[in-house]
Image (cartoon, rainbow, N blue to C red; front, side, top):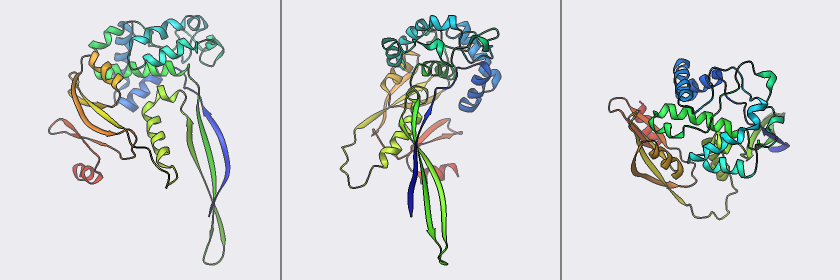
Length: 288
């Protein structure tokens, strides 16, 4: 038998801004590129006036920069993928009071403050390869996150009671965390939020009538820089990538807006193509 022991609210604040070491770590972790490659990329972004000076160990801003930060945000309205977020931050003046937060600290800065987007040079994105754009995107999303509310979770602790054949009672304890309010995660890790919200929707009590599933078109694009195909349901992201020189190849498939069925992505090293399937058996046979 299981019974809840405690429900507790937890919050998670946006992370500090990028310094070079943190950005290199994420480059290795998420994009599988070396620290030297990340340095070369962010140096190029700096030379194209897209980001601030990259060779820094600070993860905060100076008070002087904080006073003019609205200018950086305003420039990001030119990027379709984050335009709505930038506009919301400006319209609601979410940047007010930034100097009093943990993201601004003159004492933690030696020579240069954290790496942030300048809001300038957006047109140069069209000439960049996919991996360079992804590094820039991480810097932009990390920057915009600090102006948004924390994510809110509910942690539930459970106690399980079992009675053995010898009538001995044993107690087991477990806990789970549920996302309640995404907050900044909608900008920083939107893919994770969609996954978590989708899983939670699947846990609705059985027997309740479900609304008809809306369908979403998965747009297929080709990156001429890397030779890879990419799929997205986000029209704004599709339009943004097309503006950077990617080729739009139409609708790849149509899928439900909410689904717990994973789509497996596999790479054929002989043909140089990616393959997508929802069949676990097909996935296992191709990997084998």
